[in-house]
Length: 637
Image (cartoon, rainbow, N blue to C red; front, side):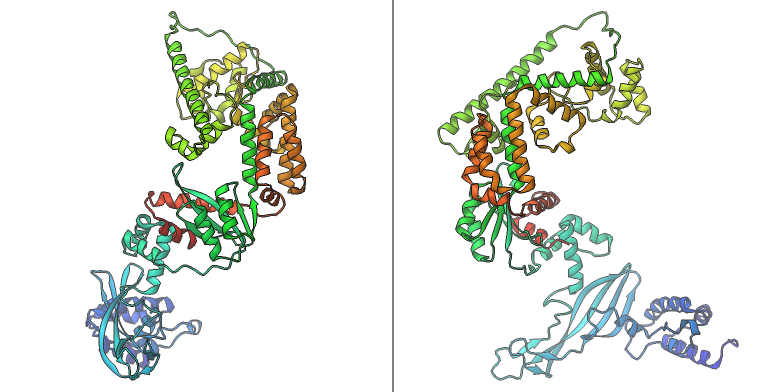
């Protein structure tokens, strides 16, 4: 102790007297900490907390160590001070202007810090707003606050009750309100409730509760959901451009409606049903809407006409391209021979570029397999095709009787898109042959074709080599691909023809070709572009359909709505029934479609929010109601 000056000794002795520290080892440690730098003072603060709590359950405000105020600081640490403990802890209260810290208690066993707090705010009657100072009584509220590291924090809040001195006031006794600390009758502070609500908005009940436990926020899933549902809805700006679309509660059975502000891409509301009445009622309550972007649904068009007759209706361009692709698919269903011929021409063109490879004959064993298995497979395929034909005939028969599409789908047990797809057909679907995609072996096709050209035709050997390269699937998949290479070699084609669906003997499906048809030429693969060239050069009708469809896509991309009527006239006179029917459908909603091909609005933001809504539904395991989904969608973290 002789190394310390008189000021040091006075400070240490004062600290001993006020805290009751008598252990020699503790005093030696204290001397070392006080005589050190700023990091030693931080350690001193950490040591004071548990030592101070062991002497008494609660300390008054004057019973506070002030040793830091008596220790001179080095010049480099002049900006750092160690304030009294209560002053230091008071900085972390929810509202320092309203609350005053009187004492604290640390329970190491329960890992809990308790702060005794009183109020010092001026009070007014909540009804008449008359200031008063007459105290009726006091009581204690216990609030849970945000944790401090691994320690939970409890506030023992001493609250006052007051008399209201205004003679005309109906409330004679009232409790002081703490709007910046906690809600009335709440057991947690406002900032803790905000943190819990953020977990519930981001993750839902179960996942949010698990994350809260990891962060020290002890709560239950039901509590999080209550906080989310009770959250105040933020005030939205008056929308002018609105996006409307449907979302599925259960696909094919029950749908709702989502409304999005296209100016700031924020969700405005979530309606539980797909109904013209609900949309009209919502638009009536928001008269500022001047533009409404929608799909080609007649239901939404009717709701918009009734709720906002002055608003400009805009058909989304994506749905126009989607409808064109569906019309092309229906047209290509009747062009199956041309699709197969184009595939053969594409394979031949690729063979001339790459060159064919002769494969040795394959040993098939001493005993050849019987044809019984192939006959059973053919019979099963015919049975499936007969079921498709029966479904096709039933759909057209019910539609001819005037049955709605929704009723047809429910009666036959199929989805509405399937009903629409069969209605667009002019003849029953043809038998389908299974086409394996071979996605798992696609990264290794280049290596397999290289080894095939080198003369290695053993599928098991190639499977072992691909396993060494990282292939983790069965040998049967590799064997099927090698069989395709062997069949191509027997037909005189190059092995490269088997890496693309546009070169197989059965040809690509009408659906796959329709997607390639509407894809821009700059984004097509080489084999896809070669296939489209073969297809359009072989048949004048296909070439005319291709020219008309590309002209319509140019109108969509360049937003030339003024030229739409001329295109419709040309498509109706082309003699292609699918495109003529598509043009007739455009005539029924011509004003909104022309606006969609002229104005810059689209339903892209709406589709993005629908995708996010699907995620929220899955997080709730399909049990979330429309109120909870609306809160989580509108108040996204």
